[in-house]
Image 1 (spheres, rainbow, N blue to C red):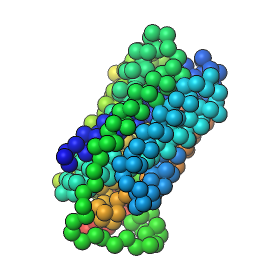
Image 2: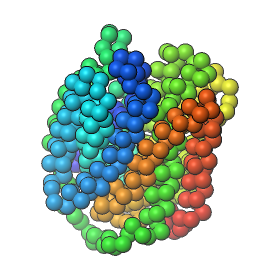
Image 3: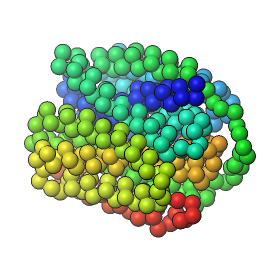
Length: 382
């Protein structure tokens, strides 16, 4: 029965992670419904921010409401959010409300349940289990991109596809929620200090997660236009979005597996270092299709590390029983990056007419985060 929690977690994450395919909907939203670039990026940024904030809410509710009920609420909100966007007739504020807020809350609730429940069942394999769960979220973009491209080719518009996603994925989320069970607490529970938000180890995790996700989210939100700057063909751009998602998916599992054998201190430095270098090269090299794909793969693979290494480190530093309480606060770094990353990328490209300065800023932030973590986290806790 406990293995069913892993399957339910993975499939739930697969549904929730479709938001990473957001850039595939941007052309239709701009062309068919006259949304601006800033509006499309604001929707994407808002769902990331709401996603992160609602995880804190979910962590609090988990102490009062059964985890299965929280997962059911997530499924219903997901259906409501995408359904509302599907019947919005292209109204920006309705799409912002539906996808940005309702599905953002659904994602936060569902993500926390899908990540923490399997880890509680397999505390001895925290890295690998967190990697499998998080991989589902990364793989969601592959599923949604393939589905959307197929439906676009048949004449569907973005809003039609939102309705389909809301119904199909909402049903899957609801069904998977029925399989969640939480193990009885065994062993001695690690007490959580009331002032943990002021502790150095928490602040390091928060800041480094922001640095690590800023670059990846900037690329995700602008990957297609970044390719268009270099005249990359449309077919290659569509394939690259899928390959980025596959790399992100694979990276989560690989980094999670590695973290059960090697120090997080070293892995974070390697992951954020490679992420910063690949992001920099995406903006400064004269890219052909092959090089564009290669650098996107490295970026996606490195970006995936953030959602495993910091979840595992939270469990390591604060105790497995406290992951649901602490990790949502760590995840705030991702929420802040969700707003700033895509918007800063779009803003700098509007000013300078290219993505060089955006890539430079993202690279420096990522590299700075990796070095900061390596230099400040205690060796005996990393």
